[in-house]
Image 1 (spheres, rainbow, N blue to C red):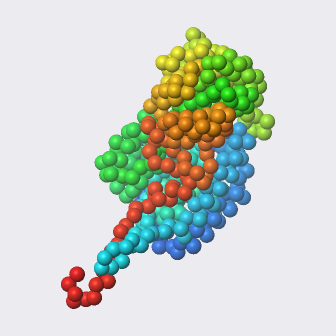
Image 2: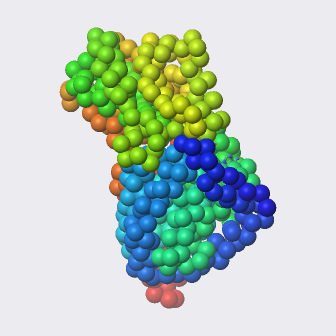
Length: 459
Ligand code: NAD
């Protein structure tokens, strides 16, 4: 049997080994998931809701352990990992309200009654990246289960531990066997089988745009339903009339949280030219003051990168000739460390300004006016997130409407609330997760007409 070694990114020590599933094992899991679906779908809505609430309670009771797995298995800071465990619980709690609210409609028609039903799809495959292993898994799991589907999760090769723990908690909470199963293994084996197996009726894929494109092409064969959450290159737009102190103080967390391994990272900072130098001066202490180190220490603000290979990729965006304006600190020795790095002035064609770095590297460029800011912000294939800093309400809303992105914040950097929609436009994705509409993405609408014409009337 093939196994994958899981390393602590802060120490490089092996913390676990996890078996890598084969195609035959994946097929067996899919068959069990199909079988479990028959009972899960028939369960009374209130009973399904109760089981999901119990699952949420089990997650709540296990928060410390789940957070610990995200620290040792993914290098997250303990502060962030605790928040993520709370988010996993909240997402479950929120969608536990779904089963009794999957309402159909009655549509006026002649000669009878027309009803719609929100039917489950069947088996849903959730393919997860390594950057937010348990949170992203749950954004797919919870609404899919609430809508009456069964779920198979394919965690990233590097970070399967927290998803495996979630599957144990589901069983402890009383979810029937086979309703939620985690199938660890390679993307090219397990993930690919989710794409090709006809019994998997929908995929939720979060990961790189490159792999998302392949998955979308594969799903076309069976017209398989698909939600895609892909890469980003989001802009943080700072106008001259903004609260510059706040904008500069918060800009590092908007890009360096999770060591920049965040699809929503605001990795392009656009600053109105008249305040460009002042903004950089204010940014410097915020970057050099970042506490980078042991993720298990509650005082730590930034941890390591996920792997040595990923660090090499991040470093390639900062060659010796790169215009490094500010560089923060990072520990020496074991661990996949990379210091927070600010590039300025940057050419708008530089790879660090155009491509998703997925590390603690941010590029700062000046803009001339509102139209110029919008043009630069939209000059990307991506459109996931972004921020706008201005005290002018009209401008804030004008720019928010003009920037082509799925999730924006004004005078803040928030992206994710479990009760508001999340997702991207352009090559950042397809569909929305979380929020009031997520359940619908895991159902098909069935229309049923019942004739009320008296028998023998011929209608
Ligand atoms: P990745 O695309 O390499 O892998 C993601 C998942 O897909 C992994 O589980 C992997 O094993 C699997 N996979 C790989 N090849 C596959 C194939 N051929 N068929 C099926 N599955 C396959 O991404 P990553 O490096 O793990 O994560 C980083 C990327 O994820 C970044 O681009 C980031 O922006 C993106 N991301 C997006 C969001 C969002 O919500 N938009 C959130 C987090 C991460």
